[in-house]
Image 1: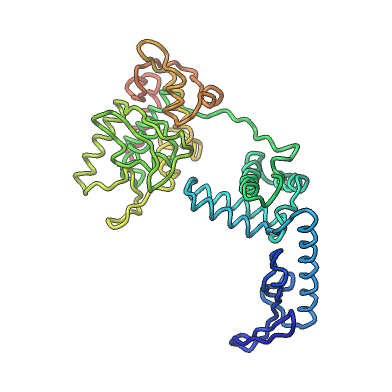
Image 2 (image 1 turned 180 degrees about the horizontal axis):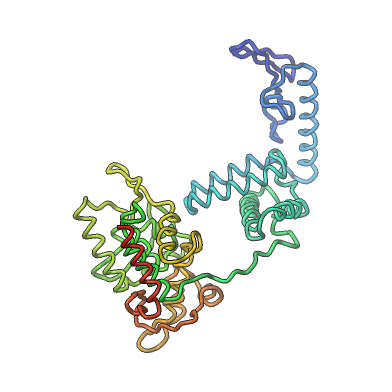
Length: 411
């Protein structure tokens, strides 16, 4: 590639003989001036037209002069484009290792929408609360308030970093007067008898409606620990102690936990012990145990992989038990554990809300008291969390008959 200079504009000729224009603004290095390709608006490559190149140079010099004046007047030293800073912000979050890859992907998607609205080269310091309110209003035309809140949170988190790096003096998201309020939704959960029916469906239809070899054990673990989906997906064999009767949730190389307070140990209830003891013995007979309790079917002997979804598995089981496809989600299992656990007795007295909160990985009791604290319509007092279908056979008689008939046909 050859280069020809003529003052501030210089030209590079590529291997195809095409002449492209560049500008040298290094005399403005105190305000970010550097060599820059002279690309017209809407184009992807530097211009080949001398007149266009000169106009772009004049425009850039005016911008740099303005920045220099701002520096002299109010101490502004750096203009930071939204797109470039958003990418830098996400990279730093990833390096910090405090958030999950899935969360990073969601933040990237939300920030990309911000870039599309405000403009890639817009100085982050120039975005005011009013403009953020306009973006919020536009998003609300097609998205729920809850989803819009996620978008605003991603942008606000970026500005928190910018504030810490002295790149801006305010967070325009925090300074908004009216933010969208997500609709308060009642937590969905299963009555103990319903959970027993679903778990029985997973057991009865095991191997008939899905290729997954641990459908029953996976659903049982979620119902009997209250673990979040990713937490259960990332459980290792060593996290299950059959001797101490515990299940330990802790960060590992497969996934982090949602918060710093989410590290916890929950009881290995007798029903889950029975399920997992038989499961681990079967696994040992079939092949050497790997690290993951529930490895993805995509795993190979050389590379073990974590599950990333269970919607098809869950739908298969739920539909066989009489629910609609997509009706039950994994969040129901966490809520169900909470509701069932709150009905437990501890030395003859109702279990403490604080105990249940810690088993769910919360730092306080607020979440349990305000959102999860449902006892359902049917009281099922017990010393342990369990969903045994034989305890509810009379109430579930017809559904169980249908379930067993369906399993028989599946064979």
